[in-house]
Length: 283
Image (cartoon, rainbow, N blue to C red; front, side, top):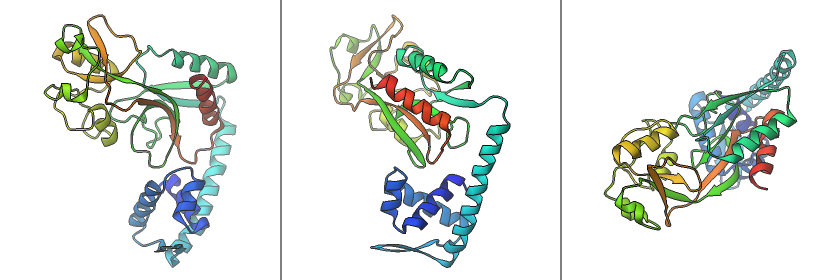
């Protein structure tokens, strides 16, 4: 039973309407409904009686509402006391980056200027989980790429990048000025490890199942192309080794650079990170 899910439950209980609760939480209704259903499964009982006009709390839901509010209040007090007791405030940022995006460098510099006394910890994002382990508490905020399952997360779009096909420079397709997904229908594509976010895997596989080697990091994607003549997708505008090239793909939705954090997290360092990232990327 996660605190975040309890916050969702309290919001629905206050609004007695999933749509209005979702609006207050700045999320869509389907993931909110799924979160409440998982909570009901954990509790082993219905928490709301549902109708076309809204919902009402069941007796079990009424009991849980009192306990959830008390638990959330206690969690907030714990956060404040721990933060006050810490000698140095910290924030852990998950970053999916190949080292060539200049916006990341500008964001780092801008954040250090605003928060010179903060210990900023960086965690490289494994391609299995594009959120960098947000739900597991491994990072506080992630600078990554969508799409992925946004349940219980808040996502801020910072930039959109057109996508191209990464190929060996001596590949016959590398001589083309542009490509379509159908041009790679008979090729092997790199795959992400088992358990990877399905939306994430589907996007980078062009929306259909593919065969190919498994990779866990951005540099492994490039090596898979170089050594195995595998094809894969990548944002345009990034530097590549001389042996590789990227050809624009004209029938692929752009890749979205996003900041993402846990829904309901009120850490001011996260809010500041998102504000600075928005200013840097959207100028």
